[in-house]
Length: 389
Image (cartoon, rainbow, N blue to C red; front, side, top):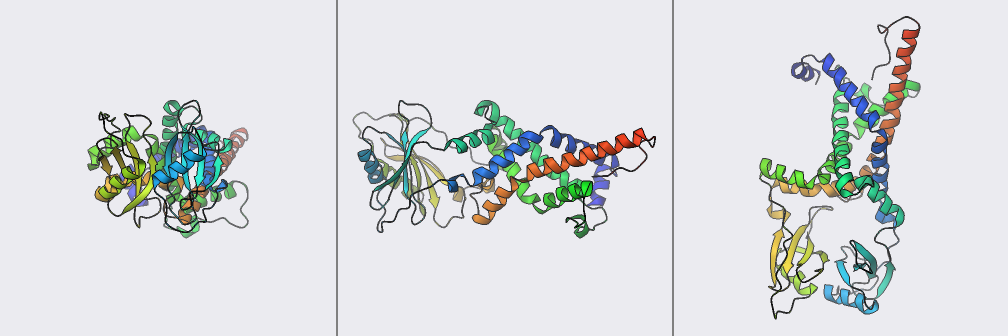
C-alpha cells in the first residue's frame, strides 16, 4: 500500500498532508450533523422493535386481502383503506393502513388484524410515534423537508464515505505492521488513547461504516443515481407510475384479484404489500417477495390496472442485472433490514461511530493545536515534533 501511495501520489507527503487537512476539517466542520445522523440512525434501526405489536394466534389458512380489508372497514365504519401489509412470518398480524380523516398526505391509523380469524387485534392512531417521527425527519432531511434537507443528507453521506476512505488511507501502516497499528493499549491516556480509539474502531468497523454511508448517499439521490446506473451499467429504468384510464361500464377488480394477477406474472413469489387506488386514475401498486429470498432482498414491484385487469408494469430483480440488484439492496443495507440480526446489530453500532469519531478527532486536533501553541510560546517553533495522527 505504501508503494502504491508513493507511485500514484508521487511519494506523497504533501498529498498525505493535504488529505489529512481535508479529512480533519470535514470531520470538524460537519461534526454536529454527522453525530446527529449517526445517533438517529441507531435508534431507527430498532424503531419497529420499540413498538408493541399484537400477536396473531389463530391457526389455519390466511384470508384473502379483500377479506382482511373488509373486516377492518366493517369494524371502522366510514374509514377508507389505503394499504395492506401482509404478514411474512407466523404470529405476525396483517396491517391495514387507513386514510387520514379530512384527507391529507400520508397514512392515518393502523389497524392490526389476525390474518386467519379476521379479529381486529389493535389500533395505532399514528403511523409513527412522536419520537420516531422526529428522528425520521432529522435523519432523512435534517427536519428541513424533503426538497431541501434530503440532498443535504445525501452530501453528508458522500462526505462520510470520503472520511471512511481517506481514514483508511491515512491509517494504512507503511511498514506493514497491521497488528500493531490497531488496538487500545491498557496504559494509553490522553492523545494516544483518543488516537487508538479513533483508528481501532475505524478499522474494525470500516466496511459497515462505508456501506451505511455510501448507501445513505445513494438513496438520497434517486433521480441522479438512476440515470448514472443506466448509462454506466445498463440498469433498467424505474417503472413509471402512469395513471390509468377508467373503462366505461367496467367493474374494477378488488385487491384479491389484483394480487392474483401480479402473483401469476411473478411466479415463485408471495404478497408483501398492496397500495390501493386512491381514485379512478390510480392502479393497484404492490410489492411481492420472492420465495426463499434473503432478508432485505429487493422486492418485486408490480402495478395492476383494475379496469383492464392486467399487470401494467413488473420489475422483478430476479430477471434484472447486477446494477439493478446493487441499487435495490441499498435501502435495506442502510436501515438494517438486510441479512438478518447480525447485520442489523452492526448497522446500529455504526451509528455510534460518528459521535465517537467526532469526540476523538476533535480531541486530537485540540491536542495538536495546544502543542503547537506551546512550542511557539517557548520559542521552539514548528520544528519540534507534535503528536501525529
